[in-house]
Image: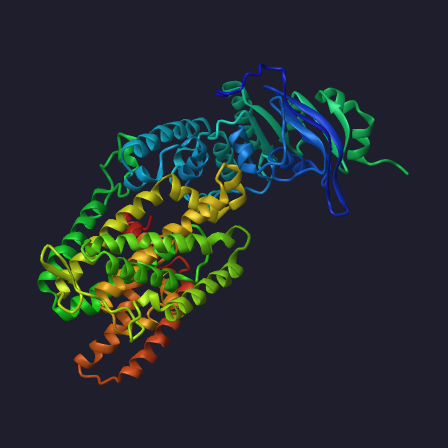
Length: 264
Length: 359
């Protein structure tokens, strides 16, 4: 899937070094460093307000950190727009579903293919020739994703009418349609029941297996995090307090204190 | 029983991706086109053609333009009237300098000028949204209106200060000016409207249309999908103004024929077209036709229909009643069906599909 990537599994895909992000006097992230290796599921956890979502926003170019560097696939990036991140193969889903509510499931996922579509305005006007060939080719790809996520039955339903669990699934589909190398998932299981969570876990593991996509995951359900992820980074008040395998993190005293509190 | 999709299986993606996947819909469109192209010109009087049909098509085209930017891309524009004016004046200048080129070509080309102006005034849309954008486009409206009156070059230094539509022939038949028959003018505008509706439908069903709607529904997510906001919004403004410009040119050349030109492109026009889009249905092409039909036909009916059945109604009263009715309709629609007549049409079709069962 990753046609441009020359990285082999285990190599460092994204490196965050000493990143600090401030909004006026509010320090969202302070001096955080970690890396994401190709092919792994990397979880970012922490209590509410720890700066997890801000971290994702920094990674995909939505926020620009005041200090620190981000190196993606060996290139240290300058200030950039989110669509540049998209063209470099970074896709994401949102904590509160950010689907295009007026459009059908199919159209939502087709929007994910926008960057891959090349036909010019002239052919679009006639909806013929290259424009139509391209539409059909991408439709085929989108149907594969629809198949993969088992959402065939809601193909033509406007997503605004779908239940929450399905919306989350469509959003994952839309991100997958971009054929990302790095997929950022912001609480993909928030507000789901057990069955829906299990489905979502299965999809995340399948994405990693089938497409070899690297995944960065924010999640509050510790059971899920510990089961799914290869490595975990823990943030608290914008600082990194732990980093390592799920077992190491579970045993870390600072993490236990952050989640359970400390006796004073 | 007449409207069923049962038994119509789609075996290819291209069959499934048609604009009208149902055979019944395609037949319906063919019937409407036949009525528009054959039945109406044959049976309609000159009065009906020039008072009802031609203005209806002009308004439908303008509403389509506004719907592209407001309904599909979610950017409110109050400059529709001015953009129509740009098209009309551009067409006037073009045909003054090159009188031998067929006027239809100039009507379509005049859209290019209003597209450029529209894109220029669309620039603030990257930074501002909603009401503030509406005010920014209002500035376009007032500025351009001022230009139409103050720059005499635009109206060829006429004493009247308005466009005086010259007679232009295509293949020996007068198409514009005082000698053009309503039938000829009707056919020309029908051709333009059908062509441009087809193009709009093609563009809006493809990649570009999807990126418009993505920007409307969730611009942050759209940007993270790789859609460049400024480019998409400017394209929406340009395309919208192109349609408005062509509508303005047809309005002046095929409907008004000059005369009361000076106040044709004022703020009222912008509002009326916005009402058409809201009542017809935001984000729907067929809604443009519904909205234009409703808002144009109510005044005509009051003005000419009521006296015909023996209820005398002074012109001014008819106009006042029109305002009352339109205002009431807008309030009703905003409360009962914010998606307009197009949604009612859709609901009706859905009911028909499952009839006699409720679902």
